[in-house]
Image 1 (spheres, helix red, strand yellow):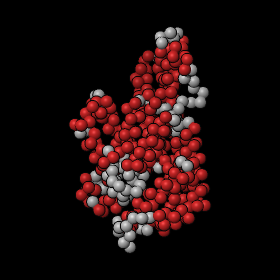
Image 2 (tube, rainbow, N blue to C red):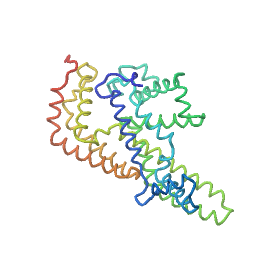
Image 3 (cartoon, helix red, strand yellow):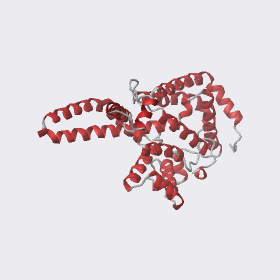
Image 4 (cartoon, rainbow, N blue to C red):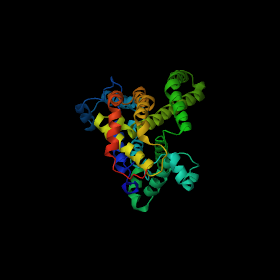
Length: 341
């Protein structure tokens, strides 16, 4: 995979590695509700040794089920967890150092293959999937998925997650916002209604059809929420530097500036990024980073990490407001790439 990345200042294998570490960190922070006790080490040890009593075993099973439901099944699905890490590793494969609009202009043949939509993201997917399907990695594939159904689900997870990294496409953004609203602003009430229906069906077997329908609706709602949580997990990890310590943010921000400034100097962009970089970052924090960090908090599965990400985002935004202009001057001074303008 590393060999499929170009030597860009920002969109590089180093970036992919940073995103992968951020994804894994967030997945390890997925937690149960604050009042959920999964039992002490000693009690778990007793159960593993086969000395448990029925009450303890039943309680642990109930708690595990609660954890599964609270995290929309992510904590109990290794395939989903690996798909997230895999996505992070491959999401910018073969990135050319320019945004999709410029890539379409430079490579119309590639753009035509993907109908001018999310060209870089789909190209990364295609190259990475071809690599995974190489005969050299048969053992790896057999470890990831053992059935055709698992293969299809893994591919669907990876495709959805990589496409979520295209934050510029307006149509995709609208669709994601609609899914978020449907999942987290409307389905909670419908789920409660569905649960009531299930209870009534238990008392009246003649309403069995409604019971099946209610369970299916609840399951669909959970799956929808899981998909959205994964999308936001990937998106947050892709820009994790903005929600970490100031020096990490500035390090990666300078790399991105240098990549875009290099494109400008080479005639691959008509816009000098140094002119509006300061204000652009302010807007990026206000209209994307901070709202994204808030959504991590609202979805309710990341525990204290969501507050940590939001606090760092706000702190970096405040620091940038004070030091951003001088930072841009420093970025320009440190630039060592080609100059032909």
